[in-house]
Image: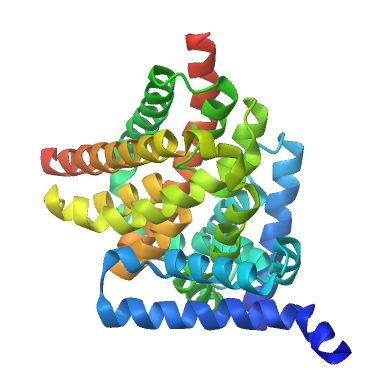
Length: 112
Length: 233
């Protein structure tokens, strides 16, 4: 587990460094994810030693979003005037994204 | 009184509260199996009520829950491992994956800008809402760059994530989607990390693809929003 946390934290740092020098458009954690993937592909990192930590972290990812969600209470007053329109828009847009992405992907697979 | 006060300000109170409420919500969710009782939604509601009732300021909670922010960042990096384990099963679908998420990203942006413009919502709020389907750190960055307000963005990102992860499995069933790749892609590109947490429950392939979709969706949305803003101005 310690080895896993060490590797993840180092790749987070690498990702953040790349993010900073490229204008911080893509966050360090996402770049870290891609660099870790490359390092595993190139066998620089031993995947077996990382498995336990990576699996237990990703399986419980929803938990880590709870504090972000609680943050809603600090700024919800900013949008009270437009709340219903915003909620409706997010709902419609989300349904559209799920539908298009899933249908296009499935179509591609049937087509082959 | 002093002892009580020091416990009140201890991060361990916040950590115990968050873990305890989340455990209880997960238990409830597994027991009742109702999508609406999404553990994140239930936990957030209970914790906000608790903080209001006990007069604990949000900033105290924010400081005390810092460890979860660190774990969130580490778990996003860890998705690189999940992707590595599944890459062989998705290699041949890379073109279709990029195409479908690209179209999804365009649809997501146009639907938000279009609906909010019709309703005469101020520009600053539109810019804050447009990146709603992207993972929080990317969305906040896009919002800043395009003239939105990051706190509003954070709210809609979480709302969209919870909504997408609740409705996603039902909608995919209704649309008769059988492909695991299509399911994972739809979850990750519409509901980012919260959707991915749900996709991991569906299966390993769905989870890996969903994690990948977060990155692709973030990249496309970050590059396309400035383009659409320029086009409409």
